[in-house]
Image (cartoon, rainbow, N blue to C red):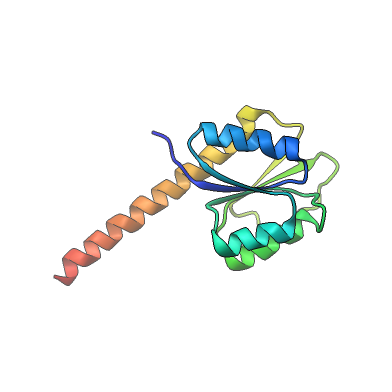
Length: 139
């Protein structure tokens, strides 16, 4: 069973973001791509993603800064950060945060997304069941 999510990719490299987009779409996910942090903020406000994939180096700001802003609006947002080995400073809460060191494989990337997508689907099923039980109790 596939778990389909809205994934926001924020990466200034159009080749990388394009490849990631194709990989995710092939898995059935809905994908939005931006090349900078400010555009990502607009997407987060207008069409919140289920999963955020962000490079730590963006054109207009630090990727970590962009993620911190996103988490102020969506505190439980799962994040996959892509970074080079030498970039070890990640002052973010560890919860729902995965780090992919460059270069990474398509398999590693898709596995990271699949873990979060599975968690999101399980959480959604739980909320749906809880709502059903509450409606039955209220009758």
